[in-house]
Length: 151
Ligand code: DQA
Image 1 (cartoon, rainbow, N blue to C red):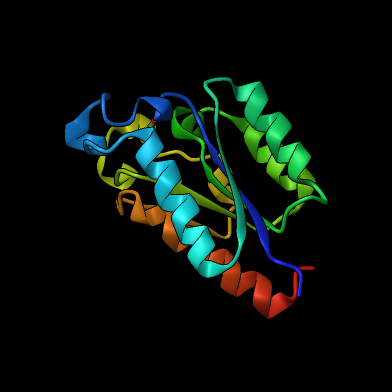
Image 2: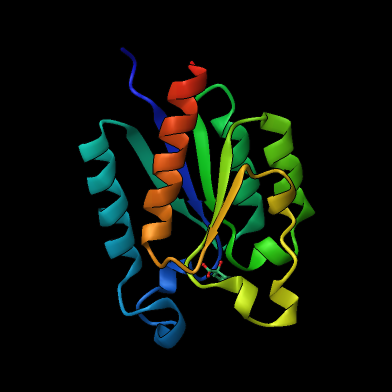
């Protein structure tokens, strides 16, 4: 049977994990996050590519590239969560199952973090679970894709 294939997209400043506001995002680095996700993917028998960019257009391009190439998208758009209609439009355009992840609990943070454009499209939003939120998102997509035989 063909392995499920997912992409995990990370937005601006997530490359600074471990350095940026450790009291909010923890002390583990972006590389730690990548290792965690890749190790999990191997154990679960799925293919996963993890990407990060500080540029909105890169994220739009990667969502478009996912079309017909992957079975689902995990996205932490970081600050673009709260500003980007372009990311929402891209997700709608490709029509793939998608899960929104935030390391911190954005619901408990500043007013300007209360809006999420991608949430309108994403099937699930996971926040405040630290790095484990990404693994929960992957579990959700595996179940979702196995149930509907995505491919
Ligand atoms: C974040 C929350 C966003 O509000 C913030 O801009 C980030 C990270 C999170 O993972 O908790 O950069 O998406």
